[in-house]
Amino acid sequence: MKTKLLWPKHLWIVTAVLAVTACQADTGNGTNRVVASTSIWGEVVQGVVGEDAEVTVLMPVGADAHDFQMSSSQAALVATADLVIVNGLGLEEGMHDALEAAVAEGANVLEVGESLDPMNVAEGEIDPHVWMDPLRVARAAELVAEGMTSLRADIDWKTRADVFTARMVATDVEIQEILAVVPLADRKLVTNHEALGYFAERYGFEVIGSVIPGPTTLDQPSSAELAALVATMREAGVAVVFAETSDSAALAEAVAAELGQETRVVALFTESLGPPGSGADTVAGMLLTNARLIADALVR
Image 1: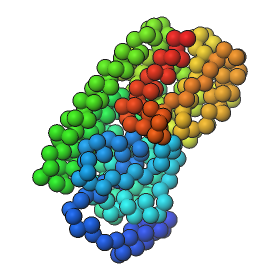
Image 2: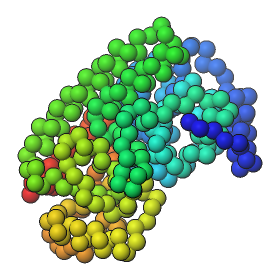
Image 3: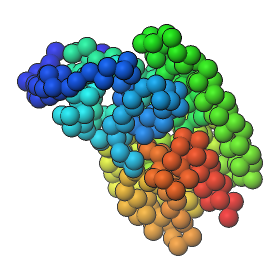
C-alpha cells in the first residue's frame, strides 16, 4: 500500500495506538493477532489460521465495505496486529486514510486483491470484488498462508490453506451445476452496482447494466443514467434487478417500478457474509446462495 505524509487529522489514530500499546498486556502464549477488513476475508483467514491466531474482523456482517469507517479503537488494533488482511483495489474507501496512517506507523498490511488478477470495469476503474470468484478466493487463502508463514514458520499453514482451497474448488463445481439451468441467451445481469463482474466472467454471464454506475456504492446515478438503464433492460428483455443485502434497494426498486409489475428485485450477498441461518454465513455458502438466487430469478 502506498503511504503519504500524515496530516493532523490522523493524530487521533496515533494517539489511540499509543494508548493501546501502553496498556495492552502481551498474551504471553505466542498467539498472533490477525485483523481482517471484511467478514468475507475474515472467514478465509479463520479457515487458514484455525485456533493458532486471534482473528478480529473490522466490519460487522451486513456492512457496506465501501463506506465503512474504522473507530479509533479499531485503528489501534490494526496498528498493533501482527498481520492485517485487506482487499485493497479501492474497496475499503472509508478506511483508506486510517489504513495509510497505520502503514506509515509500521502496520503489516497485506492487500490480497492486487495478487488475484484484478479486472477493469467499463469506465477503466479496477473492480475490487475479487471474492465473487471462488477460484480467486482459493488463491487468497494461499496468500494468507504465506503471510502467516512469515510470522511463524513452525506451523504448516499451507496445508490448511490447501483444505480451504479444495473447498473453494468444490464450490466452483457446484455453482456451475446450479447455473446449468440458465439458458445462455438469458445470462444477462442487471446489478445494483458493478459487483458481479468476476462472477459473470467465471460463469458465462453478461452484466448489461448497473443501477449505480461503477464499482463503488458511493456513486450516485443521474436521472439520465437511470433512464438509459431502463431502456437497456426493455431492449434486452431483462426483468430482474439484483440488489444487495448490504445497501439500500430503493434505486433498484425505482428502476423495477419504471419497468412494470413483472420486474423483480432480488437481493444478493455481495459486500458481506450473511448472518447465521441465512445460508450465506460462510464464503462457500454466500457464493452458493447467490448462484441459487440468480438461477431461480432467471429461469422463472
